[in-house]
Amino acid sequence: MDAEEVTALIPELLGDVYPGKYRPALGEEVPDYPGGWILEEDGAFCFMKAGGTRLPFIWIRVGAAIEIPRNDELAYYVACANKDLQAGRAYMRYGEQYALVVVDESVFAAPISRQFPATMQGVVTRLDFSLEHARDLQHWIFERFGGRPFAGDDWMHLVPDLEGTVLEKRPSAGTTTDSS
Image (cartoon, rainbow, N blue to C red):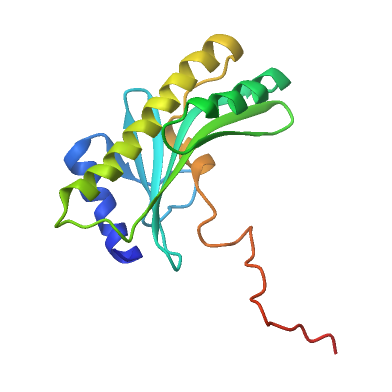
């Protein structure tokens, strides 16, 4: 599957598995994110988008908690939580006072095919594992550290840098730079 096919597949899958629980990534206070989708399911808040890279993939980011008072114990807790992951990884981002915790997953798109339901189910399974892990993290983070669930336009904190605006590609082998 190429990136264009994956972009069309995401809302189809969400509609089949999570009817009425997803929407396009649009916001009142943030710019629209074409091709991005938001899923809100049983306390979990997820952003999905096709990665239009040379090897296309589906990017899944589930917000576990946001506006968590920042402390070192939280960072250690999130790092330890990764040992129990069945898919993806958990990570923490932080500012001066607050942190957020996210479960991040990507699914390579090339083997996905509508003709082979098992490949489609593989995407749903990885999404379900990510949602479940984020819900587990959310429960324990709220109890131990505080914070709140993702909601509304908080999806902007889940948007990956798929267009390469932050991380530039490294120079190709054999590329020379002209210093004249």
